[in-house]
Amino acid sequence: MNRPAAPRLITGIAELREAVRAARRQGKRIGLVPTMGALHAGHVSLVAASCRECQFTIVTIFVNPLQFAPHEDFNKYPRTLEADLKMLAGEPVDVVFAPDRAEDIVNSSQATFVEVRGAAEPLEGKSRPSHFRGVATIVLKLFNLAEPDVAYFGEKDFQQAAVIQQMVRDLNLDIEIRVMPIVRESDGLAMSSRNRYLDPEARKQALSLNRSLARAAELVAAGERHADKIVAAMRAVFATSPDVQLDYLVLVDPETFAPVTRIERPTLAAVAAKVGSTRLIDNRMLEPG
Ligand code: PAF
Image 1: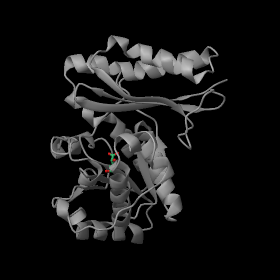
Image 2: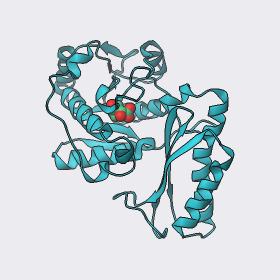
Image 3: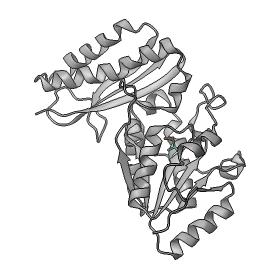
Image 4: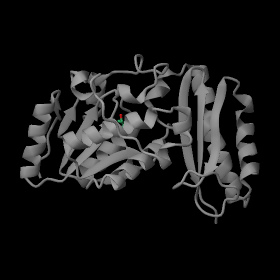
């Protein structure tokens, strides 16, 4: 099948709808990779999966104001469209949708929002109370605009993927959600657009997130099953990182996000921390036996 040499950059909704309609007429399976730009290898892995599995791939780049609280980093969030397009050059992406008028997507007259309960409430939901409402609302909008058959999300945002899956079930959306593994730097730091905020010292200390998760996996592999012992060992990893302020460090059921006391089945270790002024999250599935 003919694949594009370079993606078509679309900045307006009408043009996007037209491209989607044309792809649908040709019977193509449409894959959507929603992003906020500042693309890294983690995003590219989602794009690559879509290009493998679908005949028409749409990457959206939109820094969504609805998912940032007023004190968060919306204004300084990196906007790097040119670099993003270069990042995608190796993949046969069909369309990059980067709206040039944010108010076409989100504006102050909007009175309808998607609120997911359950999966959206603990962890990130507690620390960032309006975050998932903003994510779910924008993702539903992007689903309505791109009409994908499949949409791709990264496992680094494990809870976000669960929230989207819940929304898809609850609203009877006919969209397959694919969740792809975390991509890490060679030293283990989970790739994130926010890593670029880190100065070299903060970057070093940020490794404690992944190290604490690795420590948990090591203990489970050695037979430890007590969650409190594992959490204590994970916390100890942060002792040598004075600029890291833990937000949460938990072992939870990967479906309900309820805390577990014993590791008897696959359990999600999830951590969120501020490294200097940069908030990072990471997670790892602990597999007993
Ligand atoms: O994961 C992200 O980058 C964002 O939360 C998303 C899914 C693009 C919605 O703005």
